[in-house]
Each structure stands twice: as C-alpha cells, then as structure tokens.
Image 1 (cartoon, helix red, strand yellow):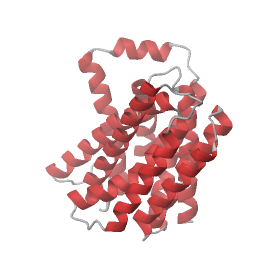
Image 2: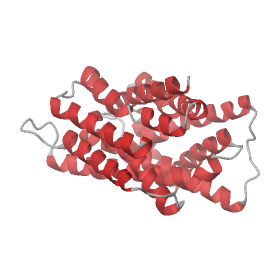
Image 3: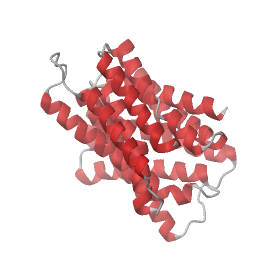
Length: 291
C-alpha cells in the first residue's frame, strides 16, 4: 500500500499541476498560491484534530522558528515561484525541472545535516540535469520564447531549491511525534506570511479585484484541493508505509505523469526527445536514492 500511495500522490500532483497551468492563464501565480493554501490550511488542521495530534505542540522557541521559516520559504515563496514557472514555460518543462527536488535534498542534507555524499550521487545529479536539458532544450518548433524559457528555468529551479531547503531544515522536527501538526503549521505559516505581505504592501484591492474577475473557479478549487491537501495526505501515507528511498523515487514519477497529462489535456508536444529527457531524469533520481 505504501508504494501505491506514493504513485497515487505523483499522479494526483501531476493532474493538479496541469490544472494549475490551465487556470494560471487568468489568475497570477501569487493569487493562485494564496488561494490554494487558504483552502488547504483549515482542511489540514481538521485532519490534525481527526488523527488526535496536538494543535500546538510543545516545541522549543528554536523549533517554532524553524517550522515557521520552513513554511515561509518552502510554501509561500517556493510555490509561488513554481506556479510562475508553470505559466512561463508550460507543465511538461516545469514538471521535469521539479525532479531537481530529490537531488537538492540529498546535497543539502550532506551540507546541513552532515549526511555523506557519495560519488554516485553526484553522477545521479548530473543525469537529472541532463534530463532537464533534454526536455527544456528549444527545437525549431518554438512554443516558448527564449526569455520565457530562461525565466521559467530560473523560477522553477529556484522554487525547487527553496522547497528542498524548507524540508531539510524541518526534517528533524518532522521525524518527531507531531508529524501532522508540523505539516499543518508549515502550511499555516506560508498562508499567513502571504496574507501579511498583502497587508503590508497594501495590495488587498488588487488581489480581491483579481479574485472577482471571471475565473475557472471549479478547476482552481479542485486543483488546490488535489495539490495542497489530497496529494499531501497520499505523500504522508506513502512515507509512513514504504521505505523513504522507495517512496521518494516513486514520487518522482510525477514528472512522467505531468508530461503525459500536459500532452493529453493541454496539447503540449510529446516528442521522443522529451520522453528521453523524462527517462534520463528518472534514472538520475533512482541512482541518487537507491544505489
């Protein structure tokens, strides 16, 4: 069941990404991220109550600071950048770029947590980069401008790096007894920091005006539910029931699902080069996590 939940998490996350790509054509990345986090936060706290976890764990001041900072970095900023990359260069390219997450986590764990980084892990990192290059390399059929592609890669890679930083810094706390509460508090920190940014900058009117514009709200609500809540529960279940290394690799199959769904639902190209890039990327992640 652990393997099943991990693959299901990848598939539903991929579906959410493709739906966000469609809705992001009318709703900017910041407003989209604020909405999805605002929707998922009460659902996550309701889950904490259902499973019987503490709403306010007895963390130290330092642990509270880490949890809150992790939410700001890994959810408020990183998710906004990810959605921005999605709008700039499409679902398939962004999905494969997101495969940098596991390599970034491995490298940051070696730097920040003292975990040993072996030579084959560097080789796996190189394979992941090669796969991303295959997917993002422009062919004669230009469907994205060079500037949009460069900005998309910057925002995409930056988003994944911040996601990795956010999860590595909170990893020791997540391994404690308050797993669900920690996940909910991270999400709440990201949501509240975005709301605080809007309040400080005085941009409430702009945000509300964009929400009042005609939007594909059923698609946005469904994608937000899938991305910020349902996929998160599947992810937790996968890590609970399967070895972490196995769950991590299975989660990376999201890149392949995104390329497939983007082809089926958005009409993005499905060339042999792009498929080869997905395969090379997945091989690189497997090398880093399993060998």
